[in-house]
Image 1 (cartoon, rainbow, N blue to C red):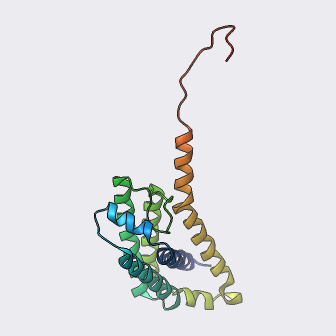
Image 2: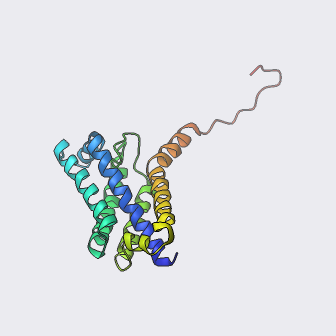
Image 3: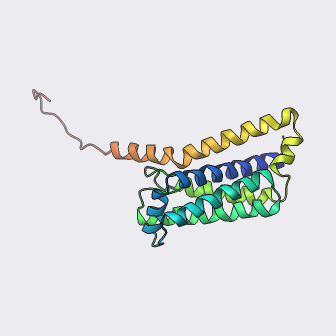
Length: 187
């Protein structure tokens, strides 16, 4: 596995996340519609469904067709996502709206992840397509597919569950006032 294969795997993971996010928007469009509304964009169910379908189509094109065009398009979409998530953080939106969950708060982790996926997708535009990498590996690229799945899964957790867990930790870690008990007190 060379450095180009790693870039292609990271780009393929970004494409897989696009398919997952698009599917989530099709299944549960309300969080995305609410996010867009909080950003001042009037987008009803139909707009969110179109966005979701577009994400699925682009993700599948990047995975199955490959090449510079889909890779650059994925990079541009992730740049847009970074801007949207950063704006969502600024307005205090309760959800990033990405994965159909209302409890996935926008976070710096998500912005940085989106920017990283943009960079690797732009870089992957100059390399082999995911199918070419798989064809060049033993066992039909099973290791490549496994790596893509692990990166996509970990990214999904980092974008959704990690910010939620960190927020819960911060909420329960409120500092307690320092008290000295009096001798003989029953506290």
